Image 1 (tube, helix red, strand yellow):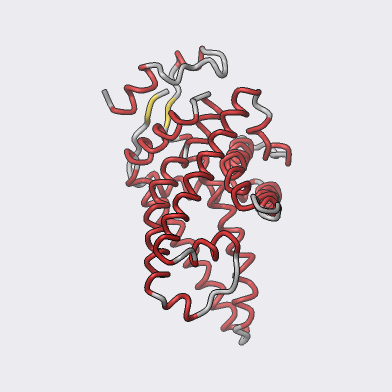
Image 2: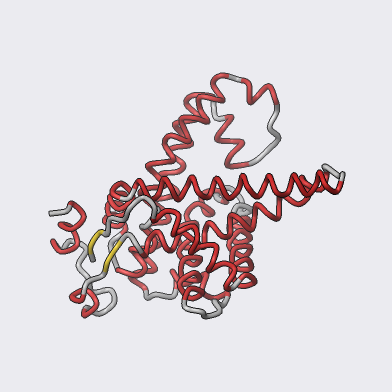
Length: 279
């Protein structure tokens, strides 16, 4: 397996492929996304450990959506069971995915802990447990600092885990090594990922403008607020559909790796390590 460095314009290609694949199987992809959201929402209801459990399930659940996208891109109808692909790939990879989930939950909670040192835990409590946002709360300087510090810390955390679930599941890389490879792949392809993110922001803005125009034509501003929520959910579902393509194009599996049996690749092998550094 080798790192594949793509031009920045590839970010637009990923967005187009995500939208095209979603509309190729709209019922399946939207249904799976809503199931994905439901599973994480139900996990948060578990007493005492709900938030941590939902965070730990996120890498595996995201992998399920990526596997569904792979099926849909081949013209196949992804079944609901594909969401638990991470737990059906054998004991070793299931355990690795659980470790990855634990690492993500730990990293996220540490990030929230750092923000709590700034504002006494107001932002962390609001984010993890929900609640009402008040004007006084938002205007507080320490709350704003905690929010921006959290956003700054989330960027490297997201880069570490962006490709990690797929590397663990499809290539048998160990959890810690998958974090390293994920970060390096994102770093080397930062231009494409930046275009990818900006393009999705553009899609959301255009959708909001279209909904607002329709509401204005109908003479009912309330339509915009009512319609934007389901539109936003569909856009997020298309975004998750496109994530698979960012992974697919960031790594190249050579013939030697194809010849190996699944799960037999050595994550410490030089042929996996050296291409990442470009040697």
